[in-house]
Length: 263
Image 1 (cartoon, rainbow, N blue to C red):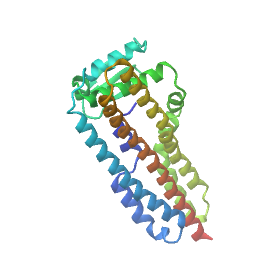
Image 2: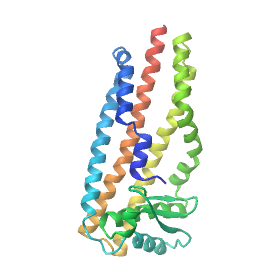
Image 3: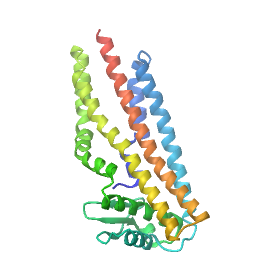
Image 4: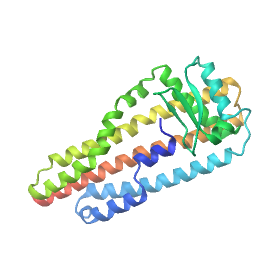
């Protein structure tokens, strides 16, 4: 599994991409409402992503200063054990925001600061990643669905842009939009992945918070702080999903605009 901000970075458009797309499509947008809507959505989603990311970093930094009863590593080990999971290892991995569960080798990978520190942030993040391990162990349907479409998403992300550009050239040459729509469909694979990710991440957080409360590691104010941290982490996925949808609307507008010019 990828970390929160890795997903946002991979599936959400960055500022340079939004600016580039907007400049190339602006003249068409003035003639096509769908393209204009796409530009507006891209700008709004870009701003939303920035706000969410800054808020997340602020919350995580704040709760990294609040002491918790145990470290992230100990939190993970206890949660796995109490859920009857004995074949998953808890390991430390380099970097920041690199926390993830890897179903391939059954490891909960925690960044160094989360692994060794006993803070609210470390405890919440560790419990969340263990939530994914519990999902895997119990064959959570949404996780299985997401894993099953990964090959399709990889193909779509690699070929989508090439096919879409080739399709636009064909629209300009003979007005045929078929290849362009195929390219858009390939792009849509990443959007599908982004939206399927939402229930997976929210469920992992719910499992984490429930266990933290039932285990007695976090109750009262401490539980509320962990909930706030995980809520803003999950919002990065919401932002990413909406950004991917905005991209689809924008690209659809380009196809419709260019097809209209050929009529």
